[in-house]
Image 1: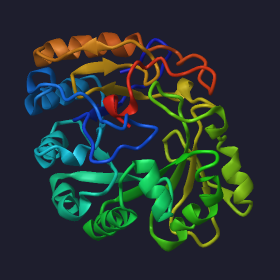
Image 2 (image 1 turned 180 degrees about the vertical axis):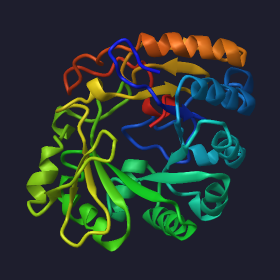
Image 3 (image 1 turned 90 degrees about the vertical axis):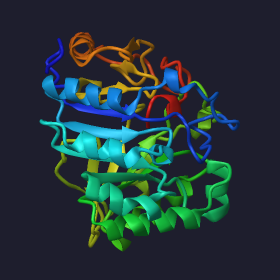
Image 4 (image 1 turned 60 degrees about the vertical axis):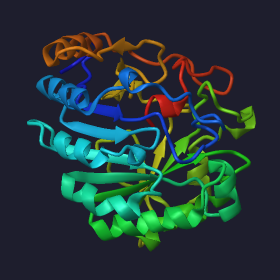
Length: 316
């Protein structure tokens, strides 16, 4: 389905939980979130009803997110049922990777085609700092499991943070030579719960300065500008929501774990669908898609996101 600006909205991102087994500093508070009752959250059947409603409207790609989706006990069932919905051609998942040693193979068998893994540093102490208690070895075990499971595509998402990992651009990019993975460098977004100063906001252009040998390659239909190092197995991508927003080409709709549709990540507008029938969900979705805003407004170190939630409550 197209919105009033002619954008084809065919990508639904579903957060299945607000909970996480890490506490990344740009994503959620140190004490986590106030755990909501089961009655406040979407059930598995409601999630699948939402996917069916979206598919009728032309959605063909679904990404499962959190929080950390792999802490959800029924995550494999959710992914399998999502992949079986008529019209859905691709199911992807974003994770910190920690539970992939147990779940990578079952998820691949369930129909998950692609996974994105979050990694902001290759330094053990810095990894522990940014996640507040994570172990880099757990991430490595997750990456190894993902590679062994045979996903069609594996991407590593790195949030650029000035004064934290700007000195690691080269070694992080070198992962594309070491493994058949893509690395995406993402500009830090000024969410409501972020604890970083203005100096932390680093343009994606810093990546190109650090990697003068990187050559541009054709886009793959996503929002990233793509490059490749000589001899690399995967690509390098720049996702620049701050320095070069891509609202004009935005093709996505978000659904939070507590059942609210967000037409824009950084917008305050939310539309509840929990408790609705599949037909009612479809009607609400159609209205939300048509009225999707043209852009998110000013967004930089001085103009914070109007999302009204931490990132873990929306879906990364």
